[in-house]
Image 1: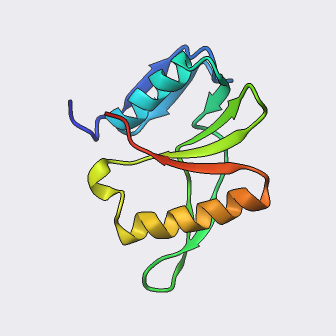
Image 2: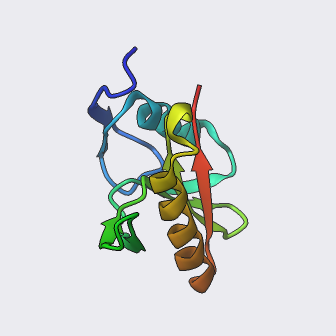
Length: 116
């Protein structure tokens, strides 16, 4: 299956919405994983989080991470799903750094993940 396949994940039990859109096969697989995880209380893709970051040219941009996940122990984790080939790219590393700091200031965690 192509990594870039888009679609709709219908009737998720742990999302506050009756459907969630995914932008890649990897996001779709993460949704299924979150649904199966007994430690996950709630997850959502439509969370409204926008994290400022600076690109390689010094421009301020905004980054919308893939998921906000809440666990049974009260943790809140911002999760970004990436193709393994892109994990070490400078852009991903800059976004990750900004996201980790943003989350730290809010008592949350950040996770960069891939699904295969």
